[in-house]
Amino acid sequence: MSASESSTSPAITAHWKKFLAVGVVALLATWYFACEGLQHHNHRGALSLLIGALFWISLLIGTLMLTMITRLFDAGWAPIIRRAWEFLLPGLPVVLLLGVVPLAFSTSFRHLLWEWTDASHILPSGHAVGHDPILQAKSWFLNEKFFLARITFYTVFFGLLTFGLRKWSFAQDSDRNASYTHRLHALSAAGVPLSALTLTMLAFDCLMALSYHWFSTMYGVWFFALSIRLALAGTVIMTYRLSEGSWLSGLFNQAHRHVLGCLMLAFTVFWAYISFSQYFLIYTANIPEETFWYNIREFDPVTGAKSAWWGVSMVLIFGFFFLPFLSLLFYRSKIVKERILTIACLIIVGGIFDLWFNAVPRQVVDPSAPEGFTVSPFLTPYLALDLVAIVGFGALVIALFLRGASQQKTIPVHDPRILESIHYHE
Image (tube, rainbow, N blue to C red):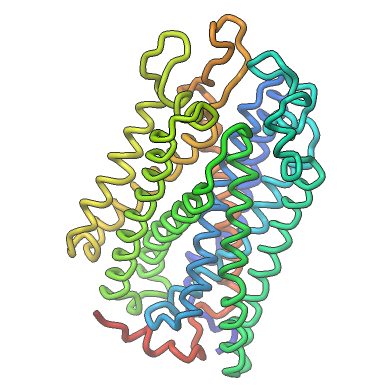
C-alpha cells in the first residue's frame, strides 16, 4: 500500500491548511498583545504565549514518552494507536521553536518573564537581582548563556528524536524490514532516560525558574506525570474521533479503550501522589524559602484572607484528581464512550488549570502593599489570551497531524505486532 492508498478519509486530511490558518491568526493575535504588554512592562501577554506553548509541549512530551515506552516493552495493544502518536510528534519541536525559543532569545521578553536574567530588576525586598545572594549561589545554572544553550538543546534534541522515531517507523511500511523494529527499540531505550532528564530540565527552566528563589526536586516528576495524563486524555479524544468514519473505524475496540482508561487512572493517582508529596514536604519543613511559593497561591498579601488562587487549588484537588479518580475506578467508565470522553475532557481542562496555578502567580513589586509584594490577579482578560494561545498552538499541531496522515500510511501494516494490536482483547 502506498501513501496515496492510505485509509485516511478526506474529512481528516483535506483541512490541514485551514487549521494552519487558524493557528497562524491566533498566534499573531497573541504575539500582538504580548508586544503591547512589553511596551508597558506587563509580562502577562508574554506569559500567555508561554502557557499556550507549555500546554502542548507537555501533551506532546507525554505522547513521545508513550511512543517510546510502548515500543520498548513491545506493547501488543499499541501499534494502531502509535501511528497517530507519530503524526503528532512533529508538533513538539515546532511548538518549542515558535513558542519558547522566541521568548527566551528576545532580551526584552526574557527579562520580563525570567526576572533573574535582568541584573537591574528590583526585587520585592528592594534589592536588585544582580545583588541577590540566592541567585549568586545558583549562578552556575541560572545564567543567561547556559539558559539559552539549554533552550536550544531542548529544541534540537526533541527534533532529532522525533525525526528518528518517525523516519524508521515510516520506512518499515515500504521496506518491510524487521531491522527497523530493532532500531526503534534501541532508540527508545536511549530516548526514555534522556527524555526524562530533558523534560525535567525544561520544567525547571520554563516554569520553576519563573520564581527562581523557589526550588523543588520533585518538579520534574510532577511535569512528567502531567504530561502523560494530558497525552492519554488527548489520545482518548483522538482515537474516538478517528474510530468514527476514519482509519481506526472497526479497529479501535473496547479492549483498547480499557487500556487507555486504566493508564489514565494510574497516572491520575501518580500525579496526585507527586503533587501532594511536594506540598506535604514543604509544609512539614516550613522553610520560608520554600513555603512562600504556596503562600502567594493561597493568601491575599494585604488582608491575609484566602485569594482566588486558593479556589483554583480546590479545583485541582476535587476536579482534576478526585472526580477523574473516583470515576475511573469503575469498569464501565473506561469503556463507555460518553463517560471516558467526559473524563478525558475534564483532565484536559484540569491540565490547563494546573499550568495556570504553576505559572501565573508571582511576586511583583507593589509599594502600596505592606509586605512589598502582591499576587498577580487570576481573573483578568488575559485568561482569554491564554486560551487563544492554546488554540493557536493546538491548531498548528493538528495541521501537522493531518498533513502527516495525508502523506503516510495510517496503519503500520508491517509492524511485527500489528495483527496482535488489531485483534487485541481483554
